[in-house]
Image (cartoon, rainbow, N blue to C red; front, side):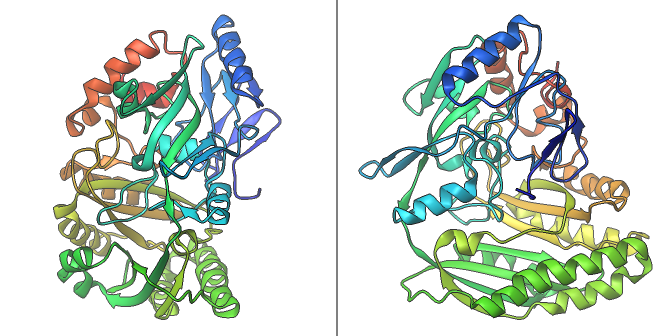
Length: 439
């Protein structure tokens, strides 16, 4: 798959191309037993261990100089329990495959993120989310999971079994063990009506609370250097199904959102002075449209333009003020930002290190085209986000460390104590975890 990470000549690269690792060894176990044996062997050989999904994280959360475990053979559905409303899948299953398989069975996840290239374990371990008034991240839909711990034992956990592990491991950062299977809550498949329309930024900010309250799923994209946004409202529908037509869909999703957008990014990278003018064109290119379809076809869309990203989770009530500050910062700087800023929401959840742990959340995500200098923009944005006790997405670029994170996560100590118990010798350690969780 061209959309995933790759290994060439023993060098592993992530999707964004900004993280490179040279593992000493690489394995693709075909069963949980083979994975257990690989973990035990690595421990004997003094190698650290990291499992990697499709490399969609922009941080070095999956990078290792030790044993790299690739889970592509651990895929597929283990069990569907219609009475309980659950599906159990192998950890290496891509979200795309899960969504297609569930749809065939007349089932769906309640909510999902906006891309589906990631593996289920990679997505949940880093806290991948969509947007929702009541429905939360993908990890918040987990009802049980199976994990190979540092001593090679296979641990199952749920709200009833090993609940302390369950609270943490749903978004475990790869720090507690290697996830081998996940059980998700699912429901009978339903229809969503998506309403996408341009809207002035001033109106979106003025009516943000109302737009959030009136829609099951609300999100918007603001185009820097303009006063324009594109909004998306997804709500359940009684039907009938009215999918996007093949030609209009191609024009909007491929030609405008990917093709012309890619060209605009190339021009902007070569001639930064053109960015504000290009932004005005780009922000007006997408027209209003309404369509009704099954969930994954509404929630997710193709992302072919490669970028790097930083995203922070702020208290929801801080979102409007923070975005106003971001806009003012861009306007008074010499920055040329060619990628829209994405704003989404999530309700509070009960996962120890979820970015929405214990608080209603708004997500502000800033992006830059791959290959353009992003540090000055991201640094200035991060300064604004951290002033609101923002929590960085675990899989996206940030500079925070354990000292900062322990202050914005009330249950931080609970997670590190569990890690001390499950992985006392730090078999699953890497530089990233050393920074964000402490040595």
